Every structure is written in C-alpha cells, then in structure tokens.
Amino acid sequence: MPKKPAKPHDEFFKATFGRLEIALDYVQKMLPAELVAELDTSKLTRVNGSYVSKTLQEYFSDLIFELPFKRQDLACSICLLFEHKSEVPTHPHLQLLRYILDGMEEQLKQKKKLSPIIPIIIYQGKKRWKVRDLSKYFGKSIPESLLRYLPRFDYHLTHVNALGDEVILALGKSLLVNALFMMKYIREPDFIIQHPQQIFIGLDEEGSPEDFFQVLLVYFVKNTELAPAQVREFIEILPKTLNKAAMSTYEKIIAEVKTQSDRLLAEERQRTARERQRAEEERQRAEEALQREEEERQRATAALQREEEALQREEEEHQRLNRLIYYLHDVMQLPVSNIAEMMGVEAQYVLELLKQGSTEE
Image (cartoon, rainbow, N blue to C red):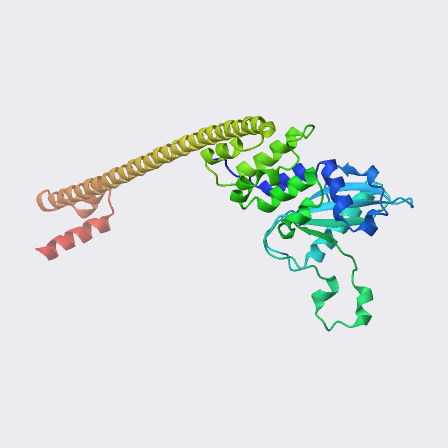
C-alpha cells in the first residue's frame, strides 16, 4: 500500500489549480459574474512566489494569478488559497487580512504598483463553513458609528464538499470538473470506484492531457486505503483509452513506493547500526571508567597500606629507641645528658620516658 504524502491535498491542489486552464475556468465560471465582466480573463497569468508567511503556513497554501481590468489601467491579483485544516477557522478575516497586507508589502518590495488582492479560499473539509462579515466578530450590538473604523473586505469561498454533483457537472466537461470531483470524493473511495465515468468525465476523449489523468490517479491511489488487488480491478473497468495509462501510472507508483521503502529500510538499518555502535562505545567507555575506578581504588588501598606500614615501622623504631634508652640508663648507668646526646633526643624526653617507666613499675 502506497505511503500517504505529508501534505497530499496541498500537493494535489497545486498540481491542479496551478494549471492555467483550470485557474481560468474557475475564474470564469465560479467568481461573481459582475466581477468577471470587469476582468480581461484572456490575460490571466500565473505569478511565481507566495504571499503566505510563516505565520500562515499552518493554514494556507496559495497560488497567485494576475490579470488586468478591461476599462482601467489597473491589474488585480487573484489569489487561490487552499485551506489546510479540516476545522473551520473562527476568524478567517484576520488570517486573510494578514495575508493581504503581506501580499501588498511584497508588491511594494518588487517595485510594483499596488493592485487589489482577491482572496479565494478552496475548502475541502467536511464541516460547514458559514461566511459572515468581519463586523459580526464583535457581536450584534456593535454601534453603526464604529463600522467605519473596521476593515471592510470579503473573500470568495468554494466549499468543495458542499458542491452538488449537478452544480459541478453544470460547469461542463473540463479539468476543473475532474479536479473538483476528485477533491470531493477522495475520502469516499468506493464512490470513485463505482463512478469512474463521473470522476474522469471527458478524460477518455482524444486530446485530453494524459499527465492530468495521472495526477488524479496518483492522488486517488496514494490517499486511499485500497489493497493492490482493488486498485487493479478498478483500473480494469476504466475506459480502454485510460486503462493503459492507468496501469502504467500505477506500476510507477508501486516502483516509487518500493524505492521509498528500500530507502527507508536502508536508513533504518543505518540508524540501527549507528545506535548499536553508540551503545557499544558507551559500554566500552563505562567499562573503561569502571576499570579506572578500580585501579584508583587499588592505588588508594596500596597507599593506605604503605602508610600503615610506615606507621608500624615508625612505632617499632620508637619502641627500639625507648628500649635502648632504658638499657643505657639501667644497665650501663649512663647519665641522662649522655644518653640524650647519644640517641639524638632532648634530655627532657629521656627524663619523661624514665619517669613513665618508673611509674609503670
């Protein structure tokens, strides 16, 4: 089973709505007619780059298009924003206001003339998105006199899952229709399997872009939990004009998945080997530390033993000295002064020793 991409819906959005023909079809058929009537849609062009800042990356991906107005020396930016989250934002105007300001600042950085930015949100979540005016954020009791101080702008919303099939089909055979159907039913693979003619409508006709069909199929296969046998059965029921391309695309996906799996397995093995090596090095360091500790303990024990032996020798020498003093005094009958001089000690030491000896007797 193919591994799901990190941002599968975002990738599909850019691969489909990033195509000029789909963006043009969307502008002409899904924006308000009065706005479209003012625009020269024949000059729609895609602009490289993004107005999405790091702050907004969590919420949106964007595609930027520019086109001029028919009657004025003025252009506007049509910005398609794909909503990442399935949760409906509580205050979308605040995110969009930041987006619009970032976009206009970018225009100034590029030494361009300021042009209006029309934010369009493509929402693929299941929850209902209720569009409301920014002034409603402050409750119903906001005085009319305050409205002039609030930002006043709107956005165009396309809630893909809320579009009826008949509404999508009414757009006519186009890549936009295929993209919308696939986005709407990507979480219902059984529907796609049972209604391939609806999902891929028009793509079996001569001249249809094969690469776009491949984009749809890759999105479908990589983002469903279908077993390989189910995918192959699904491919078999596709029109013959799509069957061959579908099987080739699926085999490429499987090969890509195998390559990714082999790479991940190799990386995991390398990571495991590195961890084992680190563990072995740590074990060796621990053993060396214990060995050093044991050697230090042995040195300390030897030093203590030497110290005790030195004390013992010193005590024995002291006793020998005392016995010799007793011998010189008691046996040889030498004066204390002579004994002290001969033994290299103070006369007082000799007197105290002799006194201690007489006391003990």
